[in-house]
Image: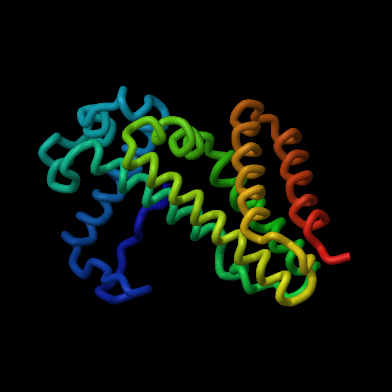
Length: 221
């Protein structure tokens, strides 16, 4: 997990950064609690993890934890937020839906996205284990929230496809929304296969097959 770096008092991306050493340390500790909770939840499971486990792993008291988060259910929300932000950040500005203007650029974009997602979701198996297996069984509210992340992924992917149709390098008759849903399904299946069989060559071969479908299956003849 990525820790927030200390910086001078400023506003970056609309977010006010901590200005004093005490405020910076407070922000850093908050992130450290989120990072440690992620590890505990992913490795032990949400229900098997207690506040004491997180506090002990980090070397802080219970009171310190409760100064930042109200309970275990509160922190899992922040862990999910943090993971979602990591996935979005990994895509980068070069991989925005409207960045590609040709089929070759779209192909290169798909390759970059595939590498980024593999690095996050497969290279660190704990991310997928938490999102796909541990978090979905906590309660209905969180399950619905995770479904919302899938809807967001569908919408984002549909944006890539719609842009390609508009510029003419993808098929004009493409059902962009349902194709996007199919792409999300392929990616999830790829993650599950990667968890089951972490062999790097097998993962690379599966990713290559998925990327071919994402190009050859939708490109304009």
